[in-house]
Length: 132
Image 1 (tube, helix red, strand yellow):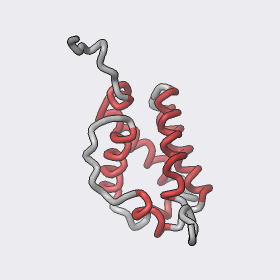
Image 2 (image 1 turned 180 degrees about the vertical axis):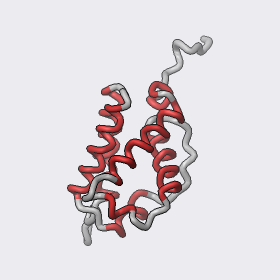
Image 3 (image 1 turned 60 degrees about the horizontal axis):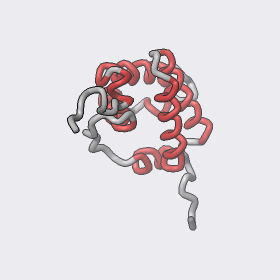
Image 4 (image 1 turned 90 degrees about the horizontal axis):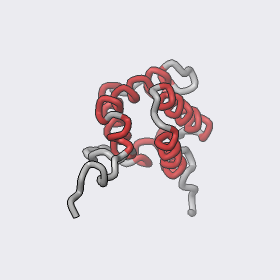
């Protein structure tokens, strides 16, 4: 059987427009997060160019695009920040709103929300309770 474009499954990454769409989403997302007084403080001392690049690489992987991410793991990067669950939820809300605003299909947004739920314990403070 010959694989054609019609039989090759299209990744979410390809469906939304690839690298350009991910870059647009990351830019709009960080505009929202940095304008949020509850969240902006986390980024006061952060190299935002590098931060945006890291998120673009991670979001690319989540959406089924090429995996070129070589940064720290989620827990290593986030546990020292002692992020409360309400801030994690707020960030997820900004990401969901960003994707919806950019016209990303609902099934793609649902899959991204599923990943957010799966990794929450790696990001939120106390995600790995002592003795667990």
